[in-house]
Length: 125
Image (cartoon, rainbow, N blue to C red; front, side, top):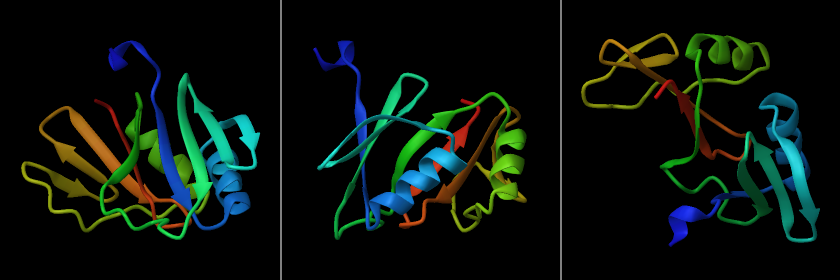
C-alpha cells in the first residue's frame, strides 16, 4: 500500500534558517514548500522535511541517503564547500580510503553531517 506513494524524510534541526541555507546552497536542494511548521525540500523527486526540534542531531543513524553516479566528484564538490566527512565508522567488509568507504570492487560511499549533527550519506549503489 505505502510502496505506491512518495516518502518524505523528516529531519530535525536546531536552526531552520541555517539548515535551509546548508541544504539549498551547499547540497543543492530546492524549496518545495515553506510554512510555519518547517520547510520541505526537493531532491530529484524525493523530499526532506526539515523542522526545528530540541532533538536535532540526536540520531546516530543515517537520516538521508542519496544515490550518485560519481562519488569522487560529489566528495570533491562538498569538500570545496566546507563539508567534513566522517571517518570513524567501523563497517564490516569496507575499507576507507581518504573520505570514501569502499565496499568490494564497485560500491563506494561517504558520510557527513549537517550543521546540526544529522548524519547524511551518499553512494553509487
